[in-house]
Length: 96
Image 1: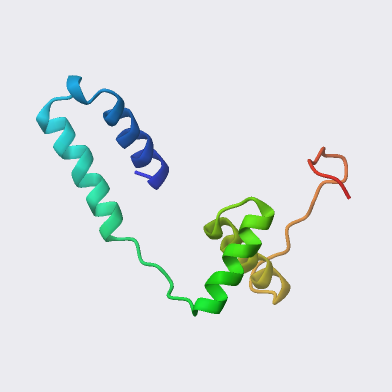
Image 2: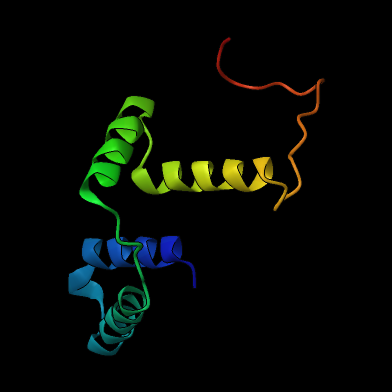
């Protein structure tokens, strides 16, 4: 199961907790517990964490999304990943 599906399942269970059986609730909580136990974070220096938080807030994205973007771009720039190509005919959001 993905993290998102577990979040959706937990939110759904919270909405209908009176209707859930005890075994179903136990299964959902155990899945969530396993997911949380297996999450490992990357420790960051406080100045680095603060800077990432500021940039993420400015871009209106989560710190996790920002880290994924920065890491992917660094890997592409340094030829560890192939550079993504943008189809010139496709519609994209945003402005220049």
